[in-house]
Image (cartoon, rainbow, N blue to C red):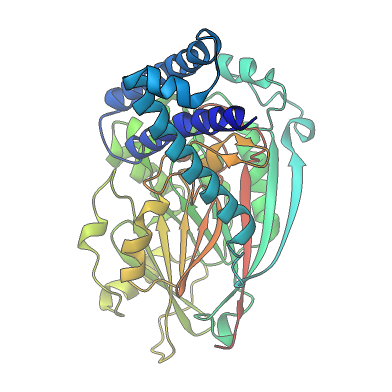
Length: 408
Ligand SMILES: [Fe+2]
């Protein structure tokens, strides 16, 4: 029995080590061809490992781990390493699952699921890959979770209490999902009647979907503006200035590497963006201070924004970052709220275990959800779609947040 447990831990350790390597490589801005190559090599390495383990277990006349480790030196070294890794990851999983606390700042939450495939007249899985993935049992790519969360944050003053923020991420316009999938989500967003709509990257993957930009993003309604940063998949659009111009023409406001201040209820809400490591800009951001530039941007953006009036209350600072990996950078700027995407919640979550793959330097730690990082709350969205339409136990997400004041 003990030997079976040890083998199980070694299997876990083997898979976990390669997942760690996979996740870290995909958190970088290394060339896409290199990442795709390593992706394939890692899959091969995992499979070879499993076959090798099975051979050692079943073709040596014993499953005794001690005997096998002593008999095969190199296998023994690798098995021992996997065993240690398996114990470590099992303990870490237990800690995160049962001991780590849910942030108190998330004072309330409720989830409503809409079945876009059922609601729409036209099929939503339209590309060949999407049609194939639709057949995968348990694929939930068409079930969108509307996540309503009340965030009680120390940086929220009474004047901002009740502010409604819609967080959207990872649209991945590929042509695999019908445009009707996205316009249905836009309809839901507009019913929320948001004060701010904030988008955290991976808007579009394919050039052929550029003519969807105005139909999708141009349809978003928000009292004080729709703000965005780009993500790694947006790099697939080779003409970056054209993409940014089309987004701007559709009414979206870019915040990468700059502050944009909106006066809301007499309080400055300062929004900045970070697209690192895929696009530069954030490295030149200066700590926030109300400047003439901010006023100019406010006037440009228009759309119901109050005139810039001098006030002495503390600004509320929001960061849009494509990846949660920028959280240390964000803490240095003392943001109150950081919104991110990129990790898609892992897209496939194993019951009890959760996600195992997330392209982050932190692995799956911040794959999705709400995290309090000292004074800053970070929300990582599971996103609306992916370049591959497969989601199991990991629904697409639309975030509707309401801020409330809290005494500290
Ligand atoms: Fe993405």
